[in-house]
Amino acid sequence: MHTLSAFVRKEFHHILRDRWTLIILLVTPIIMLVLIGFAMTTEVKGTTFMVVAPERDVSTSELVQILSQSVYFTFAGYLPDEQAIDSALRQGMAGLIVVFPSHFASDRTNTGTSSVAVITDGSDPNTAKTLTNYASAIMLGWAQKQNTTIQNTLSIGIETRLLYNPAMKGAYNFVPGVLGMILLLICAMMTSISIAREKESGTMEILLSSPMQPVVIILAKTIPYFFLSCLNLVTSLAMSMTVLGVPVRGSWVALICVSLLYIFVGLLLGVMISTIANSQLVALLVSGMGLMLPVMLLSGMMFPIESMPFPLRLISHIIPARWYVSAMRKVMIKGLGFGSILTELTVLACMSAVLLVISLKKFKPRLE
Image (cartoon, rainbow, N blue to C red; front, side, top):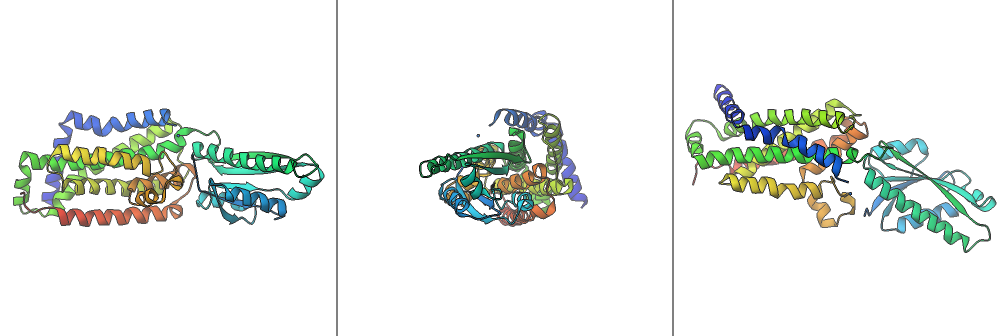
């Protein structure tokens, strides 16, 4: 333990005396968060929808069938009543809810006027707006088609409601994604470069010839960056809440736990990259350029995963940021707690275990 603490102090000294490293670690995440949070704004297919229909008459069934036949929507079933809407959206059972009123068919026949409510999850405002536009266009098209087959003129009123983000602020969508990208890139990049630097300078040979075990060397290299990443997390959340106005509605304990686990995954990913990189340049290219595009495109940060081709959806399962972004949106925007992110926590924990085993197996006891 004394050897580990001495090595950790040495790593802190190396980091603190390098001003540019501190700037990259502490200032760059804030700049990225502000720029992307304000500037970045984003066709959605295959979204699951559910229906609340007190009377499942012919008109209701026909309209549900037309919606489900669209490439934009997939029918996921009926809800018993309106009280189940919030739970269905929070649990991710559906991305859009269509609510038919009682006597929908009789109103259409007797008065020629009917109304339908379209409710969606506003935590992703761009997707929410797109979905409501799709659903509204399909239902209005159905109403116009009915006018050509019946004598009465039918008008259908559509009421849209965006839950969790009624103002449709883009930051509500992008802040969790930016946090996931920043933490993963910074953790993986700095850890991999740090170990690669030891190889280039020749000091790794001294470490390997010492009595220290590989696991001690890995821990000593990751602990300083773990604390710095925690500081990044605190500053990023503070900026999100104060500058961008994104609230944390759910459990702070759940948010901190999933964030710390995600940071650990990022650090271990950097260690694994360092086992195959013999220079700082290679480590930088693999951890920076190699991770940035998959994180941005396959994590759900910019584009809905449901609308991607099946091979890309499959690949997205191994992107740690996908699970972190999903968990952060549930906690920050939807106001959920531990129970809603158990899947994400389990996946990230399994990833950390796999990365740790791979890093220890591939960590060479001697340099070539």
